[in-house]
Amino acid sequence: MPSLSALSLVQPTEAQGYLVAAQGMLAGALPLETVTPIPAFALTLLCGHACEAALKAMLAQHGISARDLSRAPYGHDIPKLWHSVQCLGGAFPTQQPEWLLQLDNVYDKPFHLRYPLGFHGIALPNQVEMLRGTESLVSFAASSVK
Image (cartoon, rainbow, N blue to C red; front, top):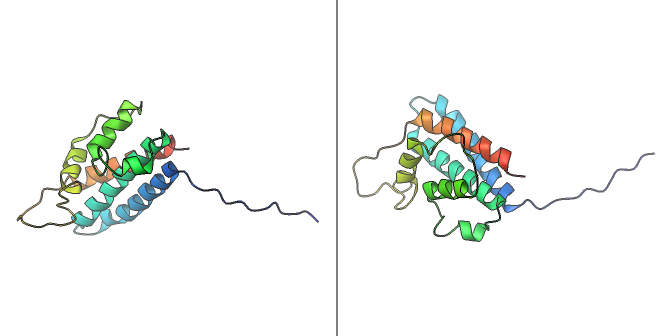
């Protein structure tokens, strides 16, 4: 009778943990595209988190610790994270897109998207461009993280 080999659990790396978060947020965002009207706040927040986590996954893959990634100069600053990946040799297929900068304007401090206080309107990125771009970024991260 053949024997089964012992099961072993492997602790995920920080890069893998960030990638799982990015993929999970994207999985939550994709169905929102089919809702009419698109729930733009929810979609934008999920895409922001997916982009942040995907970029942090790539930086963690290069040895930057989760502790360092949680504070300045990184934190929630998506353009800074993008730039940091580029500086480490991450050859993105495109230049930093405009939707990413618009996303950062509402996603990062003072967190207008999370806490819409003290203003009457908010400008969100083009939802379809942002979602397609987030898909591409998460896919790129998945191909980079081991």
